Image (cartoon, rainbow, N blue to C red; front, side, top):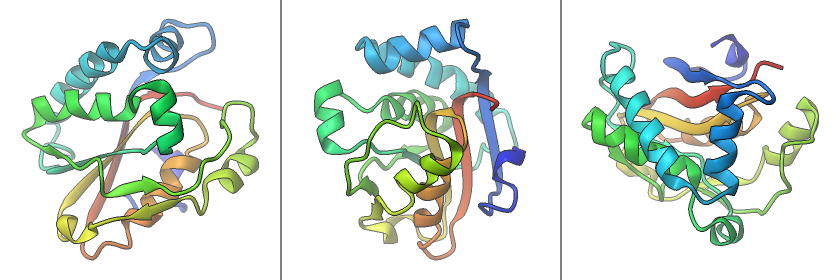
Amino acid sequence: MDIFSGRLPLFSATAFLFFSKGGGTQQLIHKLKYKGNKEIGIHLGKLLGNQLNNSALFNKSVAIIPVPLHPRKEYKRGYNQSLMICDGMASRMNAHVFPDVLYRKIHSSSQTKKSRYERWENVKDIFEIRNGHRLKGKHVLLVDDVITTGATLEACGHKLLEIPDIRLSIASLAYAQG
């Protein structure tokens, strides 16, 4: 995925669906994030996990990390949509989800109406690692719901790369080409 070229050293990156305004993917993501339909995330995660399990680039991923929400936002939503996706993926990939290694230490505003630069400024220093030693030497698959500019995944990825000897890959349910 060229969006991360020169920004983040990745082993591999992929997105399952294409996101376009008003399209079916947008409706699914909206139901997952804002309408409390976490089953959509689990189901789509299973489909994505099946696909990745058949790929030599991903089928050796052993540690799946969801992009974290700030605890306040997760409480308000009732769940982390990226974790739902990860749970579905892990059930198909013989992998483990580590939802507590990467956390969001600062509550930030929504990214939806921000420019590429504003998105980066909004997320560049808001993530931290906890107990990262559990991932040392592993192939880590960082998962989010939608890639737009890649700013959130880039910020999370740089934090994860502080863990010694990991190989980092990215997967997303959808990619929204800017």
